[in-house]
Length: 390
Image (cartoon, rainbow, N blue to C red; front, side):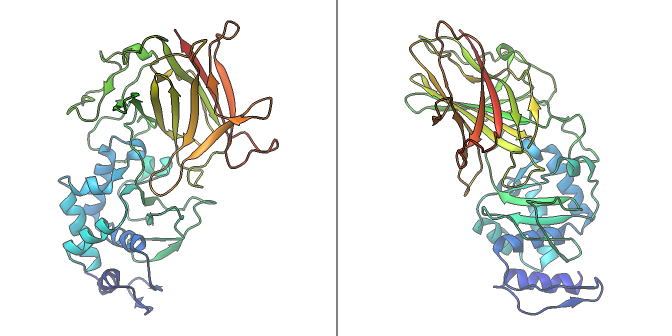
């Protein structure tokens, strides 16, 4: 172990260091100072990534992740066969004990470990040229760490780093990717043909009973959708292919029918201020029949999605009953959700409400603005189209 990394590790476990040690083998002078626990963990991970075996393990673990952006929930990773190797790799790099590494991870909020830029997931091949940064709170990191022990200034809201960025961010909700690549070893985290988008469907009854359904290999026709509750082992199956025999959830009566999302367009909507990673949207439908959510992850900052045909509510609006349709850009702890609102011709700032009348039986398209900017001159951020059958 290099003396520079050992000294780095001793500083990591303590309350911080005030010295400015120089590692002649690196030719880098590093001002350590007092760092946050998130920065300490990022520095440990970066040090572990100096080992080729550790990088190979991370690549394959991320490649096998079923989630959007191939994210690894860090606490879940520790419970897998790779968990011991992850902890021991950080301990070797920092000079800490396995117990100290585990305690540091446990002291932080739940974190996701992932590569936010799709181009990096498609191109990284286990090389040591990379940066690790942590965002355990709503504040973007200002510094990242490299495997050779250097600090790199970051300005993620304005520029993507020149090297692949490995991110430790507060954990968000999870949905399975649609049309995923085969779960076999490969040279990259993500293959070009791998599904980028992920979706889940949530139904909450009036009694408060909630069912979370992961949608995998979803065809354009919802009637052949394969529903995969996360508590059923082996669902979705390991083999590829579209469709299944799950069928739709049974619509309640009266008001039988379905409400769909059919198109979506974004106009410069950036996730946590970072425009080169995907957004997480939730379409939340509520009516006297219950509460439903279509969660969609991996939505591009400025992108167009047509002919989506994704179920939002297992019921349709009627002449007597409207469905309130709220769109949110969601995060995990500690960020609040961003609520997109519709400004109608009368200037009302509100959620779209879908209602069938004798003169309105077609799809409705709504231009939406952020709730924080409701002036008439503020830009449209999202446009969505809903459709129903009954």
